[in-house]
Amino acid sequence: MTHPDRTVRQPGRILWPYVFLTPAIVLFTLFLAVPIGYTVYLATRRAKVSGLGLGRGARREVFVGFENFAAALADAELWHGWLRVLGYGALVLVVMLGLALLFALLLDTARVRLARFSRIAIFLPFAVPGVAATLLWGFLYLPSLSPIREVLDVDFLGATTVTYSMANVAVWGGTGFNMLALYTTLRAIPRDLYEAARLDGASEFQIAVRVKIPLLTPAIILTTVFSIIATIQVFTEPTALRPLTNTISSTWSPLMKVYRDAFVNGDLYSAAATSIVIAAISLVLSLGFLRVVRDRAFGES
Amino acid sequence: MTTAFRHRPPRAGAGRAAGLVPTALLLVGAVYCLFPVVWVLIAATKSPGELFTTSTLSFGTGFLGNVSELFAYRDGVFWWWAGNTLLYAGGGALLSTAVSAISGYTLAKYRFPGRDAIFTLLIGGILVPAVVLAIPQYLLFSKIGLADTYAAVLLPQILHPYGIYLARVYAAAAVPDSLLEAGGRCRARRGGPGGGGKQLPRPLGGVDQHPHHREQAGGGPDEQQGANQPSLYNLILTGAFLSIIPLIALFLTMQRYWKTDLSSGALK
Figure 1 (cartoon, chains in turn red, green):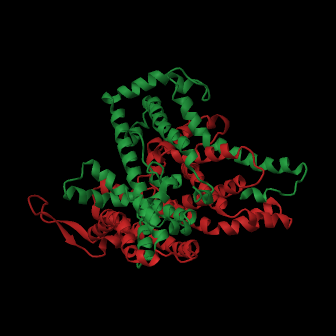
Figure 2 (tube, helix red, strand yellow; figure 1 turned 135 degrees about the vertical axis):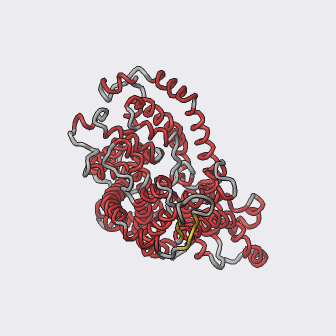
Figure 3 (cartoon, chains in turn red, blue; figure 1 turned 45 degrees about the vertical axis):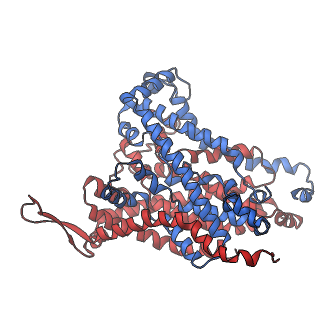
């Protein structure tokens, strides 16, 4: 299908995409690329105190190369943080994405009732900001206030249970969003595909497992990648829950350690190095996924 | 178009039973998701005395007292927080949506050298935690004397990689190329290809970004400060309740803009 105007419009079309992308690229440069460059610069430096540390010029910045990185990698507390986040993350990813997939498939079944109400209700926690959600659940965990404690006698803020309690906050807040992402993908699949399976005698369950889940795979991979990245960066839940319990240390997650180093200890150099290590680990964990995602989601477009 | 496929073979009796299990499971999920919200609604109505003594699921009598005490707390700092939130969330959402929509559309509908590289770069921004960026951004802003300004908070959050990604997926799926061909030049006169962004899926808004990047409405730091002081519990609960009410209201009114059926977006 050739349009008569096509050749006339061609020269303008080459420039327009770059014009449209200028705001995003400028913002990216100013608020991502430059700060990242500055972080790398800080990470290779350290404050050197000469003499008694008094007077002008007693404290100066010196280049230390990879010293800060070596210290970050050798830091046992940071690795304990990684282990805690790994356990927490595995729990959140499996439960949250499992529930999101289950609910999306259930919403898409032919004979489900009250689907609209359930969809809105399950997506509703998404409107509640992370800090507020953590506080709500935090109060629900508190022995003096909790209605759950009246039924179930468990200390939700104990040394081992607190991980599950935090995972619950993340699952509560994240399931609806992922469910909607998967459900939207399901709705975009032509209905006649299911009709064909139905005419062949497939049950709803068989259609879900054999037709819908394979078609959803790219969307599942994608929500997984975004969830992995978000989970590695867990900060809000433990930080907001800390005042309610003494079982969460100030270095519970790697990102909390960065925050403490930078804003409590005032050691920007170590914080910069640690944050680069965190970003590198996120990159390693998700880059492979991202490649698959790009090829699968946009290969055909 | 969909009605053409409506005549599925009727199976007597099986229909109602088959729908029962999915409906029940979804309702369990709905109750789990609504429970904390309903609980805070009830807790916010309790006076400090009632909070620890009365049954958790019965309404109290202290709601108005709590509200007026909250508004009076530290000479009305709550209003200051609310105003800030409105400014950051509202302004941030508008600007962020505009940038995401135009970037996503461009990446979906134009072929140009460097397209994949730019997309990968922008999406790569998701990998960088906001808390990590806060340190260098703060230092750089203080170097140019903007550290304690609204711009320093607002500007860095406009770029939203996930929003760009969603806008691209949506534009690719819901704006048919044939429509653009037919649109031709009148499209440019109507203000460029932003038209496709009108029905962008809801998660693009700034208030409702990816769960871990959302605005922290209300007095986050202060609510946390008070979290270990039981005497402030009723104020925190009322504050939490009041700060999620506008979000939930916004969320419910935005319902009608969801086009869960992406193909229908193209017909409008």
